[in-house]
Image 1: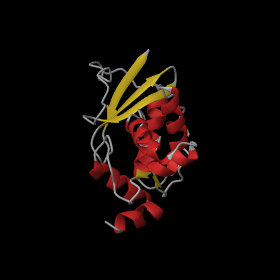
Image 2: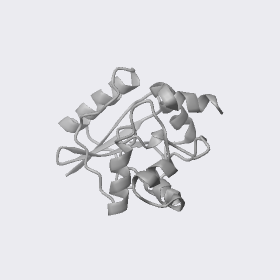
Image 3: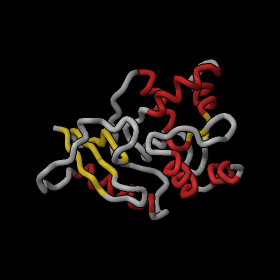
Length: 169
């Protein structure tokens, strides 16, 4: 059974989606690619444990107390999307890779950056699968399903190389 619950965040409401004790979605309300089936329950049912755990971890992340996540995640997508999303989880906290970096690490030619960007943009679990840590080859903050302002905010929160990149623009 799919369960969805919304919780506030410093960047606006987040919708958490879970199925079978795994987090399957984390979306900013109204973001690009917001799934139509991520509706909120009309009753006051308690959220599943995995959603409560994810909420706690996200709260700690926003408070600057967490830089890695342990909540179980299940991502549903094409084989290529799965490969990109798995690689996103390898980007260290405070770092930023380019779409070209991702393509190279997947053994793809440089022209595959657009396909990598498309898969990155379809990531169903924001923040925990850190698609916000991917920037353009020239260091620009290109697309983010939750909006470039949120991407900038998240990268600033994380600091490190990501913050250095932001200082250039």
